[in-house]
Image (cartoon, rainbow, N blue to C red; front, side, top):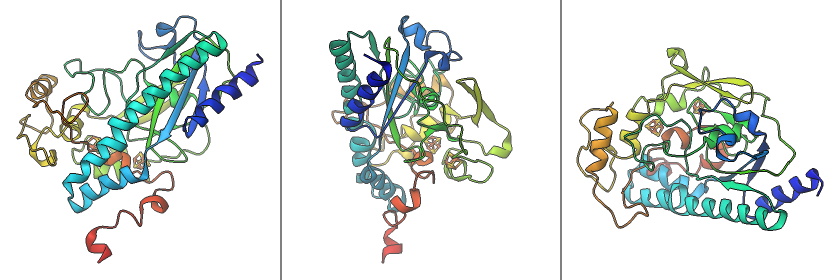
Length: 319
Ligand code: SF4
Ligand code: SF4
């Protein structure tokens, strides 16, 4: 089949599965990824990297606003169920699985479906963390956030998220490698969606100061598809304290005491804290969590004001 028609089929299939964004990049766009985490390391015959995204439900994000702004602790389970973990992860994993099945059965393609998670912004560097832990799911095989940028469906955000024109950083991404030759999309070189010199929402609002402001000069450079992008030097360990509710002030309805002493723990302290997590029957991985994601849900890109402005009024503002 002609590669243009094949590309159309693949994209249409994904849109029919409910994906909101689909892009394709060549494996060479990710050649600056670390050894063992490049597409060619994972599927030697790879010709195309297919990346797809589904927006977070507005209702799930709204639930997190209620928790953060009105102190409605019970709302956090809505966000974890419908915004982050349970439903989005399973549906995205299922979409990735069925895409692989479709391409293998219909076109005889070689594929490799990649694991996915809600946040995949940085690279593994904290080996003591188990793969589910940390806001960046450090155990993921390939950096799908970088793939989304290479495939033109997102730009890098100062907050270390891939940011989309349509939904800002409130998108979950999945990815599949295949030997099919498809038509590639170019990275989005248009006007930058995130200008951290003008917008300081993520760095100002981060409760852990884990995202330094632009003027601090504390940056990390992402090299993707021959381009260089500066993003905040994210303090993953500090972020983990809030994202996993490892201290009482972040633990929501599941106050489990302070699992780490300070606000910027070492890898070993986090690993020890994780070992002391109680086991839960309420989560698939049996570890209760308390997500932060302030830097994701308050980012103004992507019709934020129109979508969430009226919804996120506090009780006081409404009365
Ligand atoms: S998830 Fe929370 S603690 Fe982590 S960087 Fe974002 S705002 Fe900061
Ligand atoms: S909150 Fe502002 S500075 Fe942070 S990623 Fe979004 S647009 Fe960029």
